[in-house]
Every structure is written in C-alpha cells, then in structure tokens.
Length: 283
Ligand code: SIN
Image (tube, rainbow, N blue to C red; front, top):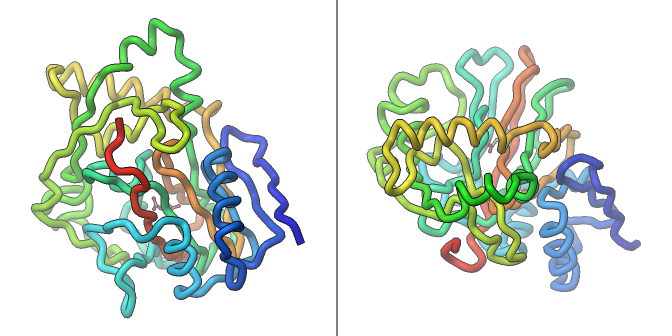
C-alpha cells in the first residue's frame, strides 16, 4: 500500500495514511516521510495507536532524541514526557502561548513528536503557525526591519524557580521541574534559514525570546509583542484536531505551536519526544 498524503488545506499540516508505524520504518520510508515533513511542516498519522517503544523507535529513526530539560520523563523512559491534564485540574493550561520547543538551547530540537494516549471528546486542539509564510507575507521594507536581528532566548519566564511553572504553580499533574538552569541565555538569528530547506522564517517568539541583541529592552519587547501578533495571524495557522491513536510530528524550525483548552471535565494525555537538531547552529 502506498503512502497517501492529504494536505490540511490550511497554512501547513498534512494527514499521512497507508503505513503502519509499528512495523514499517525502513530507510526509504523514513526518507520519504522526512521529505513530506519538510514540505508540510506538521504531519499527522491517524489510527497508529503506538506504544512508548514505538514512539521511541520512530523518534530515533527521524533523527534521535533531543535534550529535554525541566520535565521529569515518564517512569522507565529517559526521553518521553507526559503532556497531561486531569479532568478536574484547575491549574492554567500548559503551553498555551506560541513557542518553538526549547528554542533557548544552543542546538534546539529539529522536531517534536506527540502521541495521543487519551484524547478528550472535544477541545484540546493544537495550533500551529507557519513561520515561513509569516516572513514571506511581509513587504521588503518590513523584512528589512527584522532580517539581521539576533534574538536572545531563555527559559526563565516559564521554568525559573519564580517562573510560570515555578514554586507558585500549584495543582498541576504534569511533572515539571523548574530550576536555576532556566536563567541561561542563548542567541539565535530572529529569521534564520531553515537548515535543511534554506527557506527563511521567524524562529521562536516572545516568551522564549526575551530580548534583541543591541536593542533597548522596552523597544525590543514592544517590537516582539507586535511581531507575535503577526506570527500567529490566522492566515498562517493550522488547527490540529486530535483523534485517538494519532501521532503527530512537527518541525520546530518552521512552525510555532500552542495548546488550547475547551475540554473541561475530561482527561487529556499525550506522550512527547523531541527530535535532535540535524545540523547544529541556526544561521
Ligand atoms: C506542547 O506544546 O508540547 C503541548 C501542545 C498541546 O498540548 O497541544
């Protein structure tokens, strides 16, 4: 059976069927999936019902594991984190702001895999924003404003001991481990070329980006706030609807993502791995 790729019809995303990820992971298929991934940025594989061993095998085939700080892995696994919310949980939603995973690292993960374990009957969509489209839709004058800027990234706002998920965060079922390590800073170009396709796009956004090199802080934050509105504009987005048994994989170098709620009274759990950087530093 050949692969069937159905684009979402939105700004990115495609549904891929005609394969069994528990069994087929030969190098030809992996190469084909990577090509489709670079084209659509977010791939959804419905009806796979993968276990944790399958998720690890898939992640390894796609490039190996990334480094996942600030989360305790699930018991018995080094590289799988649970994105979990209990039915009666009242803590603020996890990951509700646009972000690119771990963009504060020196070599941030190329991609992320999220495997459905328990999907609520409504809500809990994951939103994606195509950052190539966000860049390409700007006029030349607007692009010139951002083209050469260097962004300062840090995990401190969410993961420092006094951050969003720090000591004041109560009643959360996810095993988040804030630490002083979150205070470290790392720079990346604001608009790097994608390391595999060469296509430019905004990388990450306000939140993990905490400033711009050489720019006065209040001016940088004002600019990043305005830019974030643009980056998440509806014309660049894809709303991913979850199904039981679905695996998704996205490219952190070309899309932002964020969680949504709307499933109060229902439990939601997904198992997450990150895919290691392919080619090192972003330029
Ligand atoms: C995440 O950002 O890793 C979680 C996304 C989601 O829960 O939909």
